[in-house]
Image 1 (cartoon, rainbow, N blue to C red):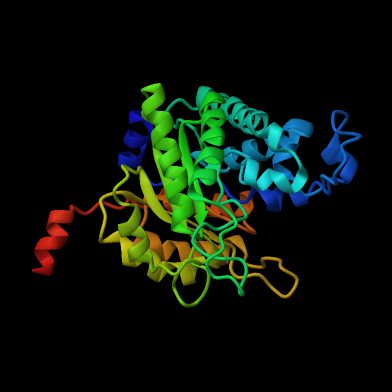
Image 2: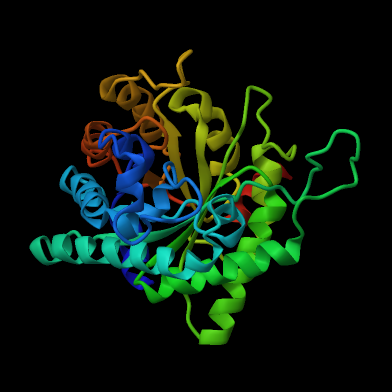
Length: 340
């Protein structure tokens, strides 16, 4: 833990870009997703990107290496959907431990290779924990507002299994990301604290919410500041936002929290907003110009990219980040004093 905290004091850390965007370039077929092992599996498997850590590990390894090569300090494991809840879509609940373990192991191997080559710039693995495809705060049925498709306890159990495998596979830290429902995130955080207590370990936690639209709120209705307040009881390494918005639209929400916490602040926005075909058109230079505004305003400690971003985007971002000092965390007492 001290390693990444030390690195955060020294420089702005760079997170990788999109995994899905990179995988699309491989044009994997149903047969590629299945590999030999799942040749006769009863459900369609194309689109289950997490499975590629087992069936196409070399591709996952290549993607991690490409991000490290252009300056990323942290790569995320290929486990965004790595819970029994999300894997139920593919009838692969029994594979969850293996999927997370293998994904973390692959990322660990690549990170260690790069750290050995450049000991002055240690590389880190963030175990990626996605939000699942269910929400604990809201009903999916407009005719039954009291109905919930998942309970807090079901989420906690699912996240706990994922967290154990990510740690066993070699993750340096855990990234609870794309949080659209803070109750889901709290289940993940609860599970992490449980595992930490049971194992007697301390592992840094990054938490990243998502502001879903121009209302400036998460899907479950919280503003950026409310989101920060509702998770600040957990000792986090960083808090921030990713996905949904491009860098320029995300900036006001980072400004809303940067002066109100002594946690590090992270951001990994999309490459702009999707076009009519769901693709992202923002060039690395366009995105870089927007992210430089974060740097000039001393808003962030960790910066990367989400949907639509590639190693080219991360190279521009990493080059920019190297020219600026990391955000100095405010002390909450100073903020409270200025409000009196």
